[in-house]
Amino acid sequence: GCLVFAVDERGVRAIDLPTTLGEVRRLLQRWQLNLDATARALRGGQPMGGLARNTLGLLQAFHRALIAPLARELGGRERVIVVPFGPLHHAPFSAFHDGERFLIERLEVSASPSCRLLNLCLERPRRGGGRALVLAYSDRGRLPHVLAEARAVARSVPGDCFVEAAATRDVLAREAARHAILHLAT
Image 1 (cartoon, rainbow, N blue to C red):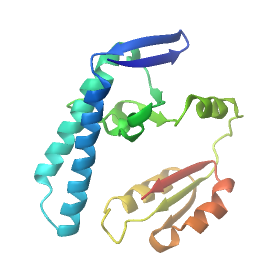
Image 2: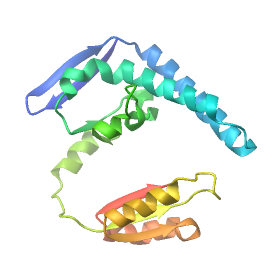
Image 3: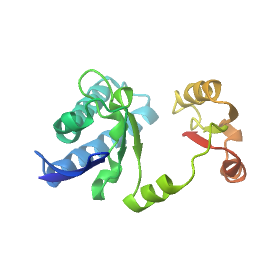
């Protein structure tokens, strides 16, 4: 099976999941195929109903395999930081679905590419509040919700919002260091 290391105020525990790395890899392959099919359907203006149902089914399968077995560990938690290993770097953890809601609707979900980087971030002094830099690019309307997402974030957190042609790499490079929060909707 797959091992999860749960770290909290009680220490470190190894939890053996009832799934294998092979099963997770197959789910990730199906997820990528679904993403590719969705992109083709969007470009071709095709209906999304079947793909949307398939997407939700895959997100529920991810949840059953990787989150449901951790219900006791996650009970009462408000946030979780995921440090994925190997192919799990491509798993959409926030979007996992339990049949009723997405994981992000239940928990604040963050990811770190490695434990070392997570520790470096945890050791840094925390900044209070701060301003947000929000950038959104809809790829000429192909990502219809990113503009609404960016505007919602910009309304809820003070800062600067750049959309469409104004949301450039140059703006990100120039402005990022002056902001405590970066939100990219792309």
